[in-house]
Each structure stands twice: as C-alpha cells, then as structure tokens.
Image (cartoon, rainbow, N blue to C red):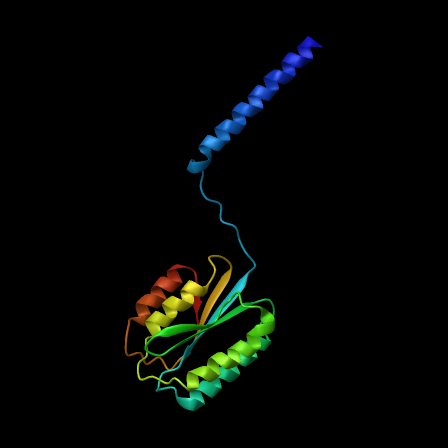
Length: 165
C-alpha cells in the first residue's frame, strides 16, 4: 500500500509541476485565432446634396432587397454627408431592423447637406464591424467627396481584412 501511495504522490507532484510550467509559459505562446461563421455588412449611404431624392429612393430599394435576403447576416447602416452617423447598429434586434432601415433612409431625405466626407463614413462603418468573421462595407454613393481621403481609409480597411463593395 505504501508503494502505491508514494507512486500516486509522485505523479501528483509531476502533474502539478506541468500545470505550473504551462501557466508560466502562457504569455510566451502565440495567440490562437478563432475562426467565426459570423457575417456582418454595413451599408454606407450618401445623404449629400449630390445624391438627391432619386438616389435616396434607389438606396432604400437596394437596402430593402439586401435586408430581405440577408439570412443570418447582421446588418448596419451608416449614412453621411459632411459628417457620418450610425442609423442602425449591428446588435439591433432583427424584429426592429426592417423598420429602422426605412426610418434611417427616410430621415436622410430631410437632412440634405452640401458636404460629403466618405472617408469618415468608411472609418465609422469599419468601427461598427466585429473583429472576426466575414466583414463587408457596401458603399451607396456617387463617390464625389468634398472632405477627407477615402482611398487611405479604404487601404486601412483592406489591411484589416474587410471587403469594400
């Protein structure tokens, strides 16, 4: 009996030593990236004067169609003129999303501005996306910017593995 007890005590000490060694080595181990099936899309809608009512209507139709076909994809909406704003968050419940998208686009029609800062809008859209999964930004704009550097923001976005359409 004493031999078995000594053997078990020796193994317990061995496993304790291994556990402590692994804990001490943890900060030096490479990070493990977890893949995610999560899909997220942020629609960036231009609400500047150059778009006009026809452009707003077209953007609304496009987002409505995409939203109806989204499946499990999380959707957000960022609109911009000289300053961007979040009109629909990714975390918003799906039951509220359809109505909120319509409200977001409709609200932009009342607030037409002369400025267009696509760069800030891309940066804000990027900030709405989670750190993992398939991430996409869809631009609904004429591309005419009066402020900022959208090419630089697009470069930063691509470096982070986010697709811009």
